[in-house]
Length: 137
Image 1 (cartoon, rainbow, N blue to C red):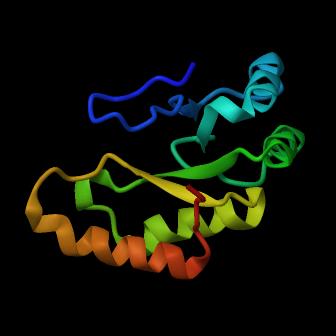
Image 2: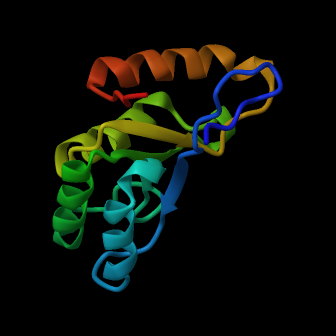
């Protein structure tokens, strides 16, 4: 049976955005579960150490490969410190995620809630796309 919204449009099943702030070498079952239920997962946010960490961590490679094979998009976690972090630093974190973990997108976190930083985030988003951050719908 197809469920309909009040305007009679078909409802689709919600897909989850999962903050994966847990290690695959200590929680491997959780990573396998994400891949197993890929149809229900919209995006996994990868956060190693409030960013990409100091060096590539090989513990993540097989778990991320399984997610990619299952069709799950992965975004790297990048802190913006409410618009106060220099964009070059935020983009450097994204670049490490792209190089080390082949993420498909970025999750900018700790974002400003005021309009004064709108230009900062517009430029950051533009530069992230130029760097290769893309997430499918």
